[in-house]
Image 1 (cartoon, rainbow, N blue to C red):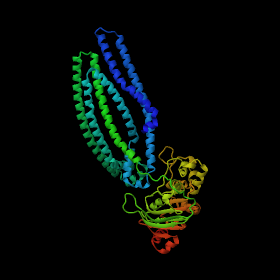
Image 2 (image 1 turned 90 degrees about the vertical axis):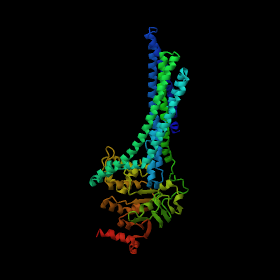
Image 3 (image 1 turned 60 degrees about the vertical axis):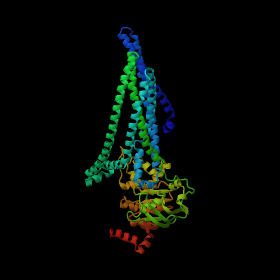
Image 4 (image 1 turned 180 degrees about the vertical axis):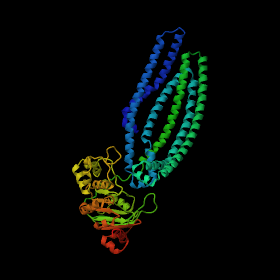
Amino acid sequence: MLVWRLSAPLVLLLLVMRVVSAFIPAMQVLVVKELTDAVAGLLTRDGEMSEPVKWLAASGGLLLIGALLDAAAQYMTMLMKQKTQFKMETMLAGKSMSIPLSRFEQPQYYDQLQRAKMNVSFRGFQLIEQFFSIGQSLLTVASFFALLWHFSFVLSLGMVLVVVPTLVVHMRIGEWKYWLMRVQTPFSRRLFYFFDLMTNRQSAKEVRLYRHANKLLHYWGGYFWKNAGEQKKVELRSQKMRIGIEGLNGVLAFLFSCYAVWVCYSQQLSLGAYVAIAQVLATTQASMRMIAQNLSSIYEETLVMNEYYDFLDSEEEENGQGRHVLNSPIAEGITVDHLTFAYPTSLKPVLNDISFRIKPNQTVAIVGENGAGKSTLVNCLIGLYPEYSGSIKYDGVDLMELDVNTFRDRTGAVFQDFLRYQVSVKENIGFGDVGRMEDLAAIEAAAARSGAADVVRGLPDGMDTLLGPIFDGGHELSVGQWQKLALARSFMRDSAIMVLDEPTASMDPMAEAELFKRFTELAEGRITLLISHRLGSCRMADHILVMKNGTLVEQGSHEQLLSLQGEYCRMFELQSLAYR
């Protein structure tokens, strides 16, 4: 069990404290019996004042011990919960970062992830608390049964009747709630999505400009009340069953109380004995109901926790123990034969029967219209989408046989949707090679190569400046400045392959010209894959791949492709018209 592995001493200590606490109520009942008899004797002039005082002190002492044990148990429970929450969320995050990238294209992945992370740390530890609570309640009820048996075995056996129907009802309610959670997951994600659109920074400008806030509210409200209506139905059914079972329990309590009066009368017991029996009956009935509720809650929580463990058991991408290590620099090049790829949710291939060869140290531009498959092709080439058919070979070795971790260590990339880490400049660049995050000289060199050094010089705290608007004291950058930092991040590693997906899309013309001026230096000694819509930048490429509708329609140098008067020439002429 996870909690035991993380906090065995705390679990044992808490168990001992729960056992002690479990017998305090029975001891209190005995003290109340003696106190009642002592007070009765004092009122009839047959007793002394010292007797009630003694039992009052005993009652106060038990209350104090119970309070101290409860406070200590709550503190230890908090410590255990912290450890468990950290471990469970660490496992969940680690699993998410090892899921095959293609699964992020599937809506079912997001449904499963939401169910896995929805209060998972709370639910996971709640199971432990409920087990402890049931154990303590069972010990308490056992001690009460022993007391009741002393007065009447019928009362002891009859109390069992309280728990069975209550347990059945609450387990049924737990099933309904779990079913509701599963059914509502896709709609809850839509609910969160539209609420996020209305509240996040990225969408704020467009929502105000196009004035569709009310429409978003309408969408959000529709999903909200749809979920609320289903929740209301389940809650009404649950309350009807709860009212029925509580009514039954009330009748049983009445009958037990009447029988207790008859027992005291027939056996000529003292007033203190009746008070003790009445208190045991009331407390036992409440404890049995609590046991039934906790057992049904454990059943519900177990169903929910299965979602968490199902997610942890889902397929992971290869962890990198390949037989071959990529050489640097690449000596023979990259060979692609009959490459075909389709997303899990799509029947139509995104890439269809593509073949080409990249020579060592070549800069290869990949061009085509939006949706042509350019980024997907690159993701296959660098092993992010391994679910392809055909073959990709590096220096004659199939990509699937290369060690994934060392391969990725030799790959640098600036993706079109690059991340903007809300941390310091130093960390933003250093994330490119976490092993050298404290190497300021390497970070400054990477910044100089990407053009980010000018950005850093204009910041108030230089490399230590906190970036982004999310946290207090953060300094926001322009999109172009963020892109320079992303480029610097890629230059932190000595890569054999460099991917540049629209590297100048957010740069001004001067910064773009400066980058292209130094492009030969930046690409030296490595294979560079350049995705660009600006065909003028393709002049510096050694080889150009022209994509259309998932197929490779042309390839060659800039001059060769213009002479073909084909797709590339058509796109180039259309773009050049804008500059004439």
